[in-house]
Every structure is written in structure tokens, then in C-alpha cells.
Amino acid sequence: MNVSDDALRVEVALADAVAAVTCAATPPRLLDAMGFAVFPGGGRLRPRLCLAVQGACGGAGGALAVASATAVELLHCASLVHDDLPAFDDADERRGKPSVHRVFGEATAVLVGDALIFAAFETLARAQAPASAMLALAQAGGAGRGLVAGQAWELEPGGVGARIPMYHAQKTGALFELACRLGAVAAGTSSEPFAAFGARLGAAYQLADDLLDVVGDRAQLGKPIGQDARRQRPSAVASAGSVSLALERFRSAVDDLRAHVPTCARPEAVRRFLDRTLVPLESRLRLSQDAPPVARAG
Image 1 (cartoon, one colour):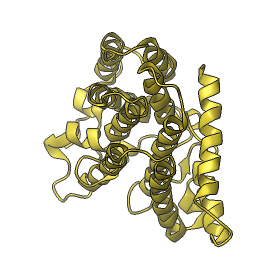
Image 2 (cartoon, one colour):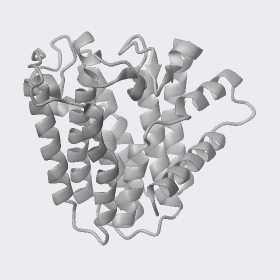
Image 3 (cartoon, one colour):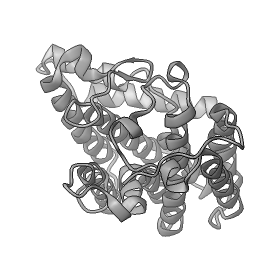
Image 4 (cartoon, helix red, strand yellow):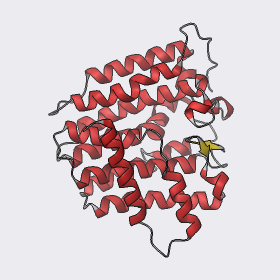
């Protein structure tokens, strides 16, 4: 199965999932806004990672694997809708088009995010996912180690402070860990080794994301840049002290991930995912080794 095949499977499954959780009684504006939030997507990294782990673990790629990948992406889409709201990032653009609240209004955007969260659970339930998968989905989005906790740290009066690794693990790493965990569960194997791998992968992706926020191109990224500085948000680049050092850390993290794929039947499936996703980010960054220092976030 190549990346194009996986991408097609994900798009078809997402369309089926949105259709399955809506009906004739769904308000038309809400239905339109849900479709706008999910399609067209970005890189679909998390669902493709889920399928890569499932394949690496020797799974047959059945309905549970596809449902798991779909649920991860639905939760991710929900988080983007909520993250863009004026109460949080107040972002005008996402994935190269206006953000959901700019087109449909804030109230509808809140409901879209909520609806997509429930859709993620319904998608897993329809595939008769085990309780461990449902629990993992809830925790990845929740107030303990998940997305809600990560978002809430930005609202704390004292800010994130020294909790930057935990904040990044919740806000970004949680969904990469979820994708890996659900992929292993779908393959019928232990999820713990790949969950830890997913957390480290999330940290590497956060590095790349923070770098792109400093030196990326808005047209290429399809979203505003400079958000970390504008929102006075902790950044892996600011923590490193310079763009060049942050890039060095990113490259090291990618090399480490490739060298330490958990023991499984077909580790090359995960290494291919890394080669097709994280490695090309280096060229997109367009960084120079003598980039100026970046002010540290408080």
C-alpha cells in the first residue's frame, strides 16, 4: 500500500464518516460547515501514521484500522476549528482557505468542533472498537494529557512557564500518540511501545511547526505565520535560542526516530512514513545556519 492509496482510503473514509453521523434532520448550515472543516484536508499525517503503524505491526488493514485513522483525523479537525476561534488564536485562515468561524460564524464553529469530536467516537463505535481504543481517544482529547489540557495552559494566568514540554505533549503530541496507539490496537498488538514512539514523533513535529511559524511561507502553509510571537506563546524555537539550533534539534530528532522504530513485523512501513513526511520538511524550512537568535518566550 503506497501513500496515494492510503490518502485515498482516508478521504473516502472521512466522507463516509461525515455522512454516517448526519442525516436529513441535521441543520443544513451545520452540515455545510462540517464538510468545510474536514475537506479538503491538509497532509492527513495522523491518519496516515495510524495506518502505517497498523501495517508495521502486521495488521490486515481491515475496517477497524480505517475507522481508527478516520477518528484521529476527525478529532484533529475539531481541534483546528476550536483553535482558530477568536477566543484562542483568532486565525483568519486554515489549510489555504478562510477558517470556519470566518465563513459560518463563531457559534456554528463551536458546534462544528463539538460535532466532529462526537463523530470521532461514533466512527470508532460503529467499527466495534475495543474499550482500550475508546479510552485512548477520550484521553487524547481530554483535560488530563490531551488537547483540552494543552489549550487550557495558554489561558493560565501564569502562562505555560517551565511546562513547555508537557504543553507541547498535550497540544501536539497527544494526537500523534493516539494515531500510533490506535494503529497498534487495530493490528491486535500492544500499543505501549508505539505510543511512546508517537509522543516522540509529536515532539519532532512540534519543532518543525514552530520553525515554520518563524520562517515559513504563509501561502505554502495555508495559515498565518508569526502566531507564536503575536500570541506570546511558548515556542520550541524560542526555547532553543535560535532558528539554527532548533533546526539542528529537529534533524537529530528525525534521525533518532528512524533509528528507534519499535520492534514490529514491518518497521519499514513506519520509516517510509517518516521519509515522506518529516524529512521533506527540512527543505520547506529554507533555513540558514547563521539565522539570528530568537527572543526567548517567558
